[in-house]
Amino acid sequence: PCWPSLTCAWGCPLCTQCWDPVGIIREINLDFCITQSYFIHGLSFIESSVLLAMAFDQYIEICNPLRYSSILTNSRISKIGLTIIGRSFFFIIPPIIRLKFFNYCHFHILSHSFCMHQDLLRLACSDIRFNSYYALMLVICILLLDAILILFSYILIFKSVLAVASREERHKLFQTCISHVCAVLVFYMPIISLTMVHRFGKHLSPVAHVLIGNIYILFPPLM
Image (tube, rainbow, N blue to C red; front, top):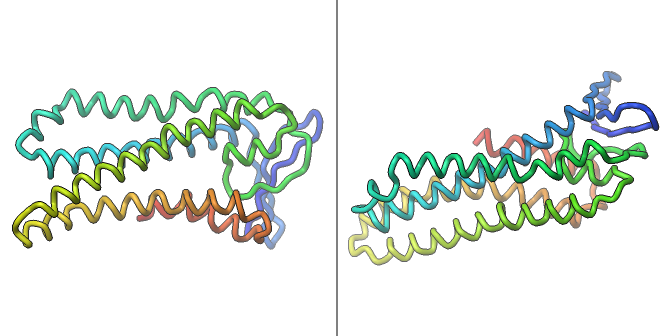
């Protein structure tokens, strides 16, 4: 297995190093590591936003089918897409840029085989309060808010479906929703698992951290 670590000596570039059983070392420059972190978190926010947009689409299609085309016009869909991209990649710029100017003064091992904002904060010797609070705000305002709105939309959808008289129609509508519900679970379950491991799994083997991290980064797109 490949064990990532982040090292810094005064005056040398920060890098991640991976050792495998035959002794091959792989490195990544700090700038590339920060860039990777930017895209990992930005794309996660995009996926969360897309799932919310899909939930809204399902709600309109099932609860207001006659108004579907008038509500979700092409211009409105374009605005939703631009809003998703903007809020996913714009609001994470400040904490990501600050990572470049932190001092990293100890030898450490990253929790995962890729760069994440919280891992870089753990290695910094600078004041990280802004990044910590800002990142928490982003998680609450994007991931948590999206999850709540998705849950609320499906409560309304299920109420509408259960009000349908025909059993066959209810079955058909549930089949329409089940694929999206599975997509939501595939996205949020690895995030919840990763958060729980970071918060309560300090005593776990590094293998567990690497495994959960790889599931988080690989499982949703593979599904």
